[in-house]
Length: 538
Image (cartoon, rainbow, N blue to C red; front, side):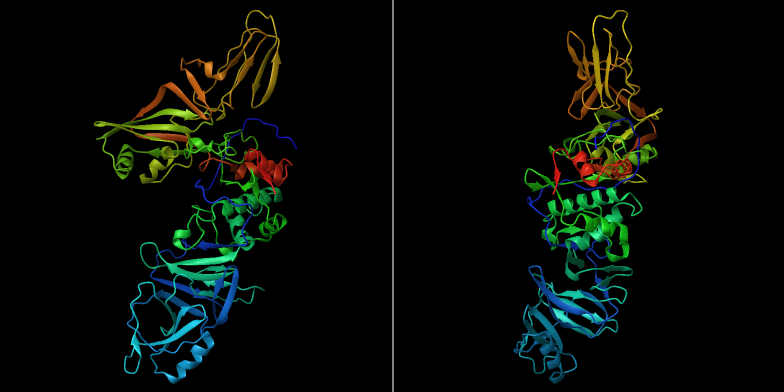
């Protein structure tokens, strides 16, 4: 189905960062997710089940079950206890557990490495040696505080797997109200404590991602498109957090993931219907970044993160219609706080100037004006700079200091001259118009608003492009890719009111745009292949 392009306005979104990793040719079978939204650098991690919790470890993709703990509700924390050990080594957890009967009441099983267990005690009376200190040692306790197991191995950590009666597959509770497929592991945190990790099959992971990223009530083709985009993103960024002991995180830094408790049968069906499918570009999986709302025109990655990506270019988003504009009030005092957070000093802030916009209608350069000087931020920082304000970062970079009138896209009008000697063709994102006229004027309602790529004016004698235009206000407009600047910047002194559209970075697929395309009859493959130039779903 062909995409008919027309004007549009828009709404909500997520934040996903473009960070290159090792290129993949297909989606991996499993993935490790850092459950940072539940437990990150935590002192204690709670793991639950309706039945005794199994322990084991992974050999590649294979889960090796070692046995069961005598508890269905455990806490895991770093263990700085002074232990004494016995020389005897046990190859099986169950053998070591049974051997506890011959030792004192303080004895506990210690996991040293796969297939190697020993007995520790806190009483040095008849122990063979003092156990070396280990700041990565973890202790597993019951709800009564009884130590059930000690683990010395952070390189090949123990995993925990439970079960719940409502599920016909292994499921393990983490924290107050989350339940996950697969296996739960615990690794040392980045600055302190411990972080929970879920190792899970890739498709099972997506069951818990798609309904967190879009509404399960949306058209099935948009759900399938989200499944392909999420699978491709997870594959492309697979090694992003390996230094932390996992592949991705469960927040918008990667993709939102809440496990079984968020799953829905409609999104699960969409994942199943696209099983294993990814977006491919030049033989490798593409980084299919997405956001909730583009504001009617997607952004070029080059003007958001600074790196050009051939399939992440700016383009009209004509089917994104479910949206409303947003407004923010920000005081100069809040802006001073933002400047201080950036480690800069411009004195007392007096005003703010928008220096330039991208062709897609996004602020490209913003300057803070102070009594001691100026401070300029560019690209995505023109949005995130406001993180220190009362309401945090702006929803998008598609904003200005005056209300948008009528539409957030410029209106292109054609005014014929007094004489006519030939044909003229005007090509815009709305299509092609051919008129028997000689003179043409191009006007935009908002000087800095979006112009879809270059507008070409073709007459019998020449072709004039939009980079030669001068607006009716006298501002010279210069266009280079997705970058547009003006010789007359917009400046506001005093407290700000900001008027905007869109939600998120705007690069790649718009989730609301995909919804609109699906409702208009496009398939999920057509949706993906529209938003990401040159990719193929395979």
